[in-house]
Length: 188
Image (tube, rainbow, N blue to C red; front, side, top):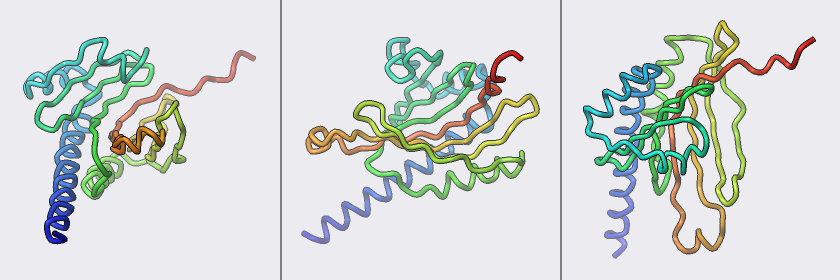
């Protein structure tokens, strides 16, 4: 019996890590090498036969932020484009645990090294209702005072009853974002 449990745990770990590697490669292709060309992202999603989410489905995740999203059938992951003022590309999926981030770090480090100027941002931890959100990342300032960032977000349900009922998974995402310059602080 212990052998069966160990084999299931090992298989689950391999599956999570293999999926992490596949979705990291997708993030690299779509969000680092193609984005911010929204039309090119759309063309890749069409070529992959991804299902475009309806405006109502987009609203569930993005609320009132202008965006488009696509569901990928093979990994049950989604690809998102958020439109300015925060222009972002993300790959999101549900997972029982985070998995090996080495593939992500390799592509993010390469991207950041090629462009230069990236530094760590303060980690974010916050709650929105019964969901806890954690984010880490790096950013660089651009000449027009806007910024470019790479983030990793994970979120999970904190409600003890829902967790006891099995809602223990993680919603995970990689994000490449261009943010507008901060407000100037008003007229003088």
